[in-house]
View 1 (cartoon, rainbow, N blue to C red):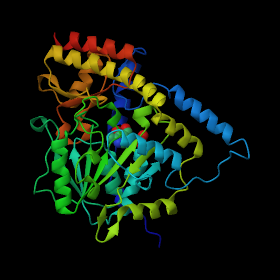
View 2 (view 1 turned 90 degrees about the horizontal axis):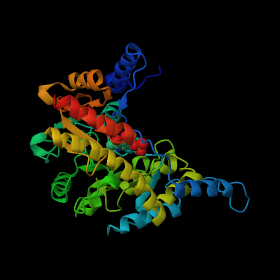
View 3 (view 1 turned 120 degrees about the vertical axis):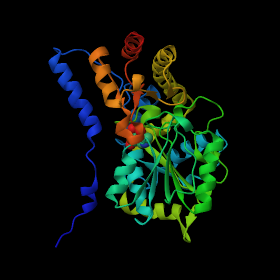
View 4 (view 1 turned 30 degrees about the vertical axis):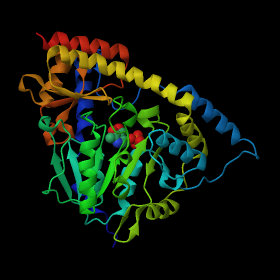
Length: 395
Ligand code: PLP
C-alpha cells in the first residue's frame, strides 16, 4: 500500500499572512475601500536594475543564434556566474574556489533541499523569532526541532549554550524578522560551538547586502573556523529584486566533513541528480548584479529601502519606543507600546492609522509583544505611515 509522508500532518497552519490578509480585507470592505499603508510585505517593490535587464536581453538574444545558444547548463552553476560570486567574496577577503559555489533558484529552495544531506535523527536548532520556513522544512522531513528563544536582553542575538541538543544550527543574519545582525565576536561563539560539537551551521545570508556598518560580517566565512562547520545560503531576491526572477547561491567549503563524508562532494552529487541547473538567461542576469555597475545600481535601490527604514526608526526614536533592526537590515522589530500583544497592536494600528504591519507572535512565541515593519514598500506611504505612527502613539 502506498504510504504518504505523515510528517505533513504535523505542520501547523501558516495562519500569519492569511490572518493578516483576512483582517485587512475585512477592514477595507467595512470602510468603503479605505487606503492602507502596507508595511507588512516581505516582497520588494522596485524593479530589476538596468544592468540586469540589459544582461537578460542579451542572453535572450544569445539563445536565438546557433553559435551562442546554450542548452543544459552545468548543474552546479555556470562558470561565469560562480566566478562573479567568487569575485564578490574576494572583495571582502574571503577566498573561495568556484567549486565551492553552487547556483540556486533562490534561498527557499536551498533551505529545503539542503536537508537531503542530513539524517533525520539530527535535530535542528531554530533561533526564535524566526523565518517560518526553517521550522516547516524540518517538520516535513520528520526532524526534531529545538527552539532557542531570544529577546531584548540579548538584542535578539543569543549565544550558544550547553543545553542545546541539536546538530543543525540555523542562523539568519541580518535576521528576518528582527533585523538584528550578529557581530563577528558573537558569530565566532557559534562557529566554535559548532566545531566543538560536530554540528553544521546553515547560515542564511539573504539580507547581507543591507549591512552598512563596516565591522559587521556579511558572510559567516569572515569568521575563522567557519570553513569546517558552515554552509552559507544566499539569495539575490532582496539584494537585487530577484523575488520573481529567482536566483541565489550556496557556498559549501571543501573542508566541511562529517562522519568521513565530504558535504561539498555530497551536494555536487545531489545537484547533478536532482537538478539540471538554473537557466543560462537567469544566470547571465544574476551575474550582472556583481559587475561594478550592477553593484552601483542595486545599491541605489537598497538606498530607497534604507530611506524607508529611516522614516520609521526616526519615528520610533522620537516616541522613545524600543526597537532593533533598520540600519543593517530591511526589517524593524519594535516593542508594542502600552504592553499590547502583537495582534492587539496590529488591530490598533489598522483601526487608528490604517497601517498594516506583521505581528511578532507569528514568528514564534517569544515574538509576542513585538511587531515587524518591512521597509520594502513605497517611500511615500512609508513616510506618511511614520508620521501617522508619531501622531497616534504620542497621543
Ligand atoms: N531567507 C529569509 C530569511 C527570507 O526572509 C527569505 C524571504 O523572505 C528567504 C530566505 C527566501 O528567499 P528566496 O526569495 O531567495 O527564496
